Length: 328
Image (cartoon, helix red, strand yellow):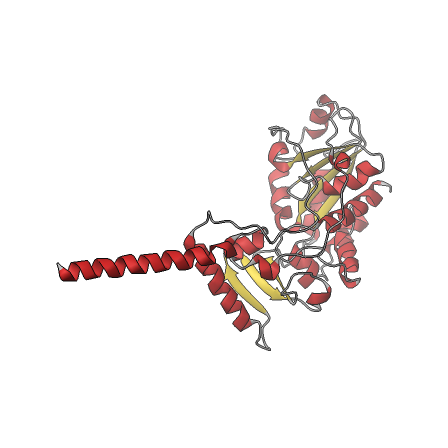
């Protein structure tokens, strides 16, 4: 009995100590950015601190099919309607649909669009580089549109500053421990002269960025977080041919191809040639060149370190590039 009682006390004490320590580290797991959450690294090290520009909520409206000048079909880079706000501010009316609702651009797309009452002149086809080939491959065999409208919800302007005061005690205790362990590991790795990158798991890679502290506002500004499975190669002429074939379905309208460079392309692999070729062959703003220009001019937090998406300032740059393409 004495041994059993002693064992019980040891177990209870160990459990209490684990809980206390886990509860102490749990606030470290209060994430804002998807890459800090996936990589389990503190926001205090990789959360952006530079204030972002304000966006007028009135410019985030979604025009009806019937009144729109421009139809935008896009992924999560189009859902906040931030790049569209640049067009709306200049008097254009934009109707935005996601790929989740549109599914594909099929052979009957133009007739289907007529039935929706769209009388505009341009269709913006927005896809992030990471998913571009897959999106083309899904649409090209498609014969008939399968539209599945999503519930309409209001879109609000994003926060201009990131809050570091948010404390979340609802997560798992083990996550707090893992975040602390990753913080300690990073502190060790980052001081090494040869440090270049760290495969953090869960499809996240940390990478040292040349002149990082001139490009990012977070505390550990020499390094940034990226998707580990970003598209590192360059698209070839077969991709351009697929674009041509799909663009032929947008009859009587002008398709504007908006291929958003992956974050790692913008910062780590900026010499790809696809965007220049696409610009030569289609209405396709050279976003890689535009982003390279901003990075060379030390535009801070074009892509925040903890994010997979553009900052508000980055979205407005994207919107300007699209607007200029629409004027051609």
